[in-house]
Amino acid sequence: MPAREEVTQLLHAWCEGDQAALDRLMPYIYSELRSLAASYIRREREGHTLQATALVNEAYLRLVGGPLPEFQGRSHFFGIAARAMRQILVEHARARGAAKRGGGAARLSLDEIATLAEACSPGILDLDDALTRLAALDARKSRMIEFRYFGGLAIEEIAAMEGCSVATVGRDLRFAEAWLRREMTA
Image 1 (cartoon, rainbow, N blue to C red):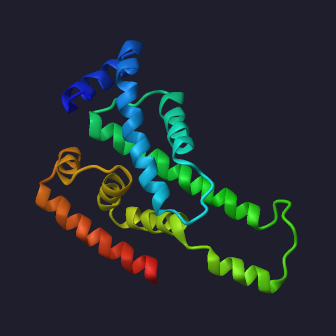
Image 2: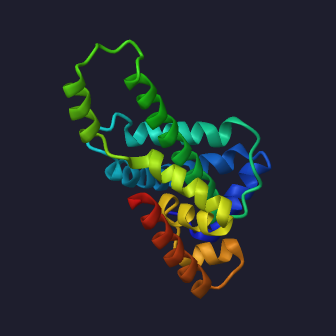
């Protein structure tokens, strides 16, 4: 596995059009993204239909499908990848919700609907809504939560990306976690 500095150099080379850099980087990127995706899927409700491999593949296609951003380094790349995976999970949950509201499904009695509603946990849509509200109040705290829990970044990596101290990241994360907990239980 390449060192962090080598990953950053390969990312810069890839952004400049060096396909060989992507070829060298791909196994590392894929294994890291796969591990992130697997952790997301484990946190989803039981019976979630999106698989970790599909989540990684979709995120990868979104990352390379358009113009490449100028990645500042490994942490920045995985932060962007984390955001892409979060968006995919939200879109998947919304599509599933839309299918439940009609989408050619069989008709159910009111009792069956009540049973289904109890079985469905709030999940990713509520979290996405809460993170969006947090971003409106404090975009940096929202990014930090995204980097930490969706991107799997260490506090030191977040501090470097945000240009602040490790202590500040710790305080901001504690505040944001408490705020989200309150929002999610309200």
